[in-house]
Length: 418
Ligand code: GP9
Ligand code: MN
Image (cartoon, rainbow, N blue to C red; front, side):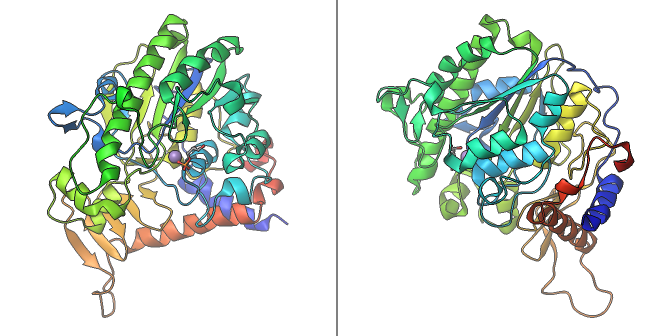
């Protein structure tokens, strides 16, 4: 039966259900939602330079006209891009191992495309890869996407592809004709590809010099990140030309890290750090998150945030009542928010602390406050400990929902779920 769900949904109502920011509630009502997944883009390149040049000039310029979240963390695990999609669509955590998109694609979910569909939205995903990669075709169908423009929808040639497939600039260019056919309002998700490990790029597409370090990966990363930045700029121009721009909110998000801790030395060199600490590693899990609403001024948002919060944030902007939803995230514009961001490995970030590998750090300074290994004697608890318990509880609850397919016991339409 669904008794397990009662405890979990009580927890969610208590901890994560908020009314949402009132001022912004419904501000994007009936507007199209264009979501752009920025492959492997980490925040450390945003507003940063290489050889005296901005790495991502276009995205940097967007900071002035968007809500830009500078302390936004990815929460993915082995399912990489598909995990980021899963988190955004469901406001649940991904699986501790494997990819939910493969292991639990047939579960009952109450996903973003489904909820938006109930509220008059058409939905589509645009991504030029084999449709069954990450089992996307099966999962998308289950969670209510109306259409998937996969590799077959694109003209892919030797000239217009590199690395994993169609170059991002060609991808966006070829997508516009499909968007113009979509009935408004729509929710469309675009998944970029060029800035993917091992960050290959044709010479003619490179507009910034490579970095010079012992890591070819990091050296090339800046070039493909710049290429992606330019592709997004071109896409914005297409949207303006097609008259779509003014009627749409555009959300951009990095899906997960691109540079692993295998490249410590090169990263330390680029960031000018003496040491690659576990604290630094957690801070490098920040990915860019932009919300662009036409007619709204920009603002840099410094509060901690994560992918888990995207779903309730979008629903609030659209004015869709999600009080019956079950999610672990909260509206990012609401002051009254849950006060931690959990990473899938149990590390977490709060306003004051960063916790990882049994160590509790001051978030601002990076100084080690205490380490569980050193604490001894009665009553001597880490300041991180209360959070540690709640983080583990929450991650376990999410696993229970997914592994037990618990949402099949919940009727999200029913008022009694409140
Ligand atoms: C593949 C693309 C990249 O379709 O989404 O996948 P990733 O390796 O980043 O999960
Ligand atoms: Mn990815």
